[in-house]
Image (tube, rainbow, N blue to C red):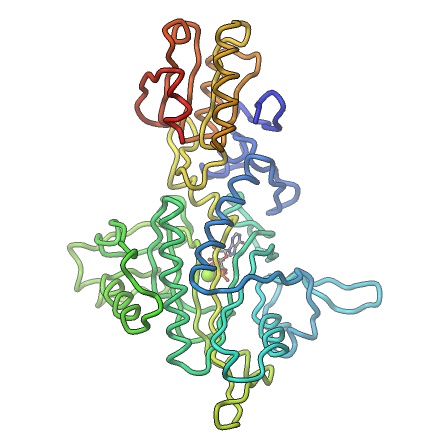
Length: 436
Ligand code: ATP
Ligand code: MG
């Protein structure tokens, strides 16, 4: 992509209404614009990051055996009356009336709809277990939308719903998602700690929140220092229910809890290693058994012909919140420092002298080579001063900067710089290959 033809409205000044660094940087880097309280337009750079995150989430859900669907955002109030949540959900739900005075709503989550859809398609115990998910916009009329995409009103969520014949099956489904979450966040270059949690309006018995440590987070968290190390999940076989459970039990032996679930006795036991911080909730998993299937009269036929009420779980990831959470964890004084897996482009190709024929020829050649090799490159071919180009590249935080200047070109080299790290000289002829 040529920057001269791109739509990247960067801001020099930090917007006064943005309180946390991720919100400031997303506005300054031209990723988003607010269109109403807690509602954002995603500009090209932001959209690319959102898509990267979405794809990692999708790949790990698919790998865990979940099946993707897409449900409508607008749902009928009657569906929600079947579970009793239409009245119980309260003012966080955006209620809509259509031209025929029918009551509708913008989905804040989708347990009811997935339960209904599942009921239409599953008749027998052989149709279970299943885990169905979507990546879809949600609306919650938050009292205080703030911190940009970290707490919006409209936000992108991955929500999955599992259906099992019994408690043991449902636990395995829960554990599968649990490990998929650890893998998902690790692939994005961040470390999310699973913590026992309350279930809130979703209801149920068992829940974990996945929390990214950040000083600007809204949750108070307490954890054993062991959690600061990443955990290797590569060797865990998610199909082996026993091994998976043992792994997760072992993991959870180290203390970690949010303020609501704080257990002073357990904390005292690990006192010297206990840390306190703030954190951002990037995902949550729930087991709630027969809560919705019972309320909505959903059964399948068991092996002996008797009716079975499926056990359910639901599993959310804040896809748009993750964009902000990753920036909270990955930035420096000059701007964003994207982990490579979620970066909007891999390389900023910077031509310092667009008026110099040799520089221009070298930059154009590299741009063509990188593009041909499938490397995502943002080519700064604008007629701007070098300082401004470096400031933009640092602000938008692409992992690599490949810099072309007159002196280097005369020597046959370009400068390759890791964002926030070292710089080296590379021969022009080798530069593209280095970045593959
Ligand atoms: P919170 O406690 O932060 O209000 P929640 O527990 O109500 O969130 P869940 O129902 O668990 O949210 O939704 C699943 C995920 O969706 C959350 O883990 C979070 O990452 C994301 N999410 C929830 N509310 C918002 C919001 N207002 N803006 C952005 N993301 C959100
Ligand atoms: Mg939650």
